[in-house]
Length: 343
Ligand SMILES: Cc1cc2nc3c(=O)[nH]c(=O)nc-3n(C[C@H](O)[C@H](O)[C@H](O)COP(=O)(O)OP(=O)(O)OC[C@H]3O[C@@H](n4cnc5c(N)ncnc54)[C@H](O)[C@@H]3O)c2cc1C
Image 1 (cartoon, rainbow, N blue to C red):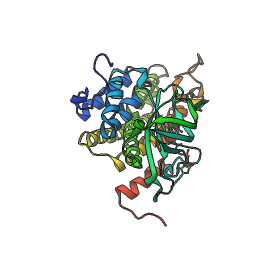
Image 2 (image 1 turned 45 degrees about the vertical axis):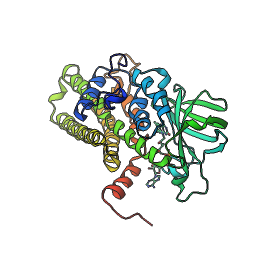
Image 3 (image 1 turned 45 degrees about the horizontal axis):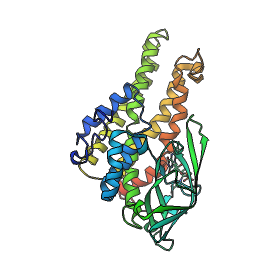
Image 4 (image 1 turned 135 degrees about the horizontal axis):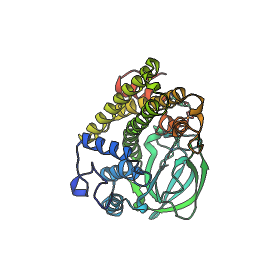
C-alpha cells in the first residue's frame, strides 16, 4: 500500500499525502476491512502519530518520521505510552518523570496496557516535566522515544481478547532533547489532539462490524435452515444494521471535522462511546443468534461461525481502549452539552 501511495490518504499533498475527502477515506477504510487487509503496522502511525507530528513536530521530526510512515515501514511502527497503573481515566495524574539534563531528558516510570508495545519501534511517551505545575496537566510533555534505548524494559502480557499488551519500565532512560514533541509542558494539547484522532479511528470499527454482520446474515440464510426468515431474528439483525449505520455516520462526521482542521472533542467522544457499546451488544447478539455453538472459537471445526465469540472478547478494546464509555459521557456532558462539573 505504501509503494502504491495508499497511506496518508488524508495527509496534505505537500507532505506526500493525497488530501482526500472524508467520504473517500471512509470508503477506503471500509474496503480495507472487507478485504481483510492487515492494519497493525501502519494504523497507529498513519492515523494518530503522523497527524500529531504534522501539527506539532519539528522539521527534523517531520523529515525523520513522515516518509517512513507513508512507506508503511516497520521502522515507523508506534505504540502509545500514556496509561500507567494509577493513571488511566485520570491521565493528568501520570507519574512517569522526564528531567532535563543538558542536551538530554532522563525518563523514569512505568507505562501499562500498551497495545503492540512489543512490536513497535517507537512510542509516543507522555511524561511529567514540571511536578509543581497546577493544574496537573500543565506539567506534562510528549516525546517520540526509540524503544530499543538502554533502560527500557518491555514485558508483554496476554490479554483476554487474544492479543498482547505490555507493561513498560523506564529506568533512567536518556533520550535526546530533540525527542520532545510539541512545547515543553505543552504535551496536553498534543495528547488531546492525538486521543481525538484515536477515538475517530476507533469509530471506524463500524466498518469491521459491518463485515461481520454480512457474514452472520449469510450464515443465517445459507447454513442455518434459513433462520433469517424468523421475524424475531430479522428484528434483531435490523436493529444492529440500523445502529451500524448510525456509527458509520458518526465516523463520517468526525472525518469531515478533521478535514476542516477542527479537533472533534465531544464529537469523537460520541462516536467512541456509541461504537464501544455497540461492539459489546453486537458480540452478545451474535452469540444469542447462533445458540450455544456460537461460544466455540474459530479453532474448533464444528463452530458455526468461529470468529463470533472472539468478537465479544475483542469488544473490550473498543469499549475501554482510548478511554471508557463513562469518560466519553463526561466529555459529552462538559464539552458538548456545557453541563456544570460535579463538585
Ligand atoms: C484492550 C486495551 C488496549 C489498550 N491500549 C492502550 C495503549 O495502547 N496505550 C495506552 O496508553 N493505554 C491503553 N489502554 C488503557 C486504557 O486507555 C485505559 O484502560 C482506560 O483509559 C481506563 O483506565 P484504567 O484501566 O486505569 O481504569 P480506571 O481509570 O481505573 O477506571 C475504572 C472504572 O472507573 C470509571 N471511572 C474512572 N474515572 C471516572 C470518572 N471521572 N467518572 C466516571 N467514571 C469514572 C471508568 O469508566 C472505569 O469503569 C488500553 C486498554 C485496553 C482495555
